[in-house]
Image: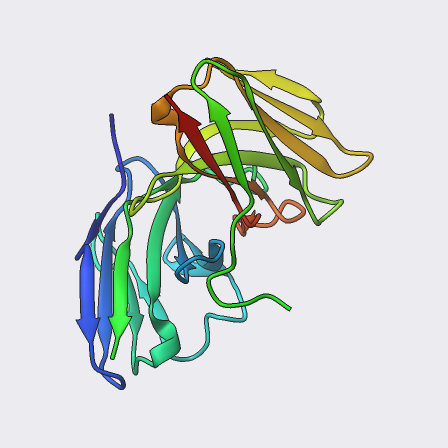
Amino acid sequence: EPEVTQTPSHQVTQMGQEVILRCVPISNHLYFYWYRQILGQKVEFLVSFYNNEISEKSEIFDDQFSVERPDGSNFTLKIRSTKLEDSAMYFCASSARTSGGRETQYFGPGTRLLVL
Amino acid sequence: GESVGLHLPTLSVQEGDNSIINCAYSNSASDYFIWYKQESGKGPQFIIDIRSNMDKRQGQRVTVLLNKTVKHLSLQIAATQPGDSAVYFCAENNGGSQGNLIFGKGTKLSVKP
């Protein structure tokens, strides 16, 4: 069964450093998403991406964040200068279509980011 | 207000019993709802979804009920098994946006053998 994959599974970084989180969405999907989950809290939307551009982003997704689809398979989230409060689990998701947001999003296993 | 690492509502059931997990959603314009299961250290796993033109949908051992009048969603799990132990989240599509899912706080289901 196709699935979303993410690397690395864990990332430890120093405050102020740049990190890149990588995702390989399901191969025939066209819509890609990043979410985050701070420990013990609910999953929060960061950004959606379609046709090589951002479709929608949340207040969390400030200028320190960027997304990119560098090739036909990868989808990345970059945090330019990490802060302590960026420590969280980051989930990538993908869907085949969006249909006004009525399409199932399938989530990857996540990358646990720890900023020291 | 909320504290960091807020305590999740917990539902404890005996193996073989039915479980009902409830969720209140926030946006009356949302027209698509999903239940996800999240096991420790893993990503949300799709269970079942429902569109607002329905009030009930059944899957394998799971049923989702939607009450738009009171903005309430429930997940029923029949014959609960130890493997069902996880945190369950409801999510809504935030009024039909381009994919901005709004997740609920989650309910932790513990199944006693």
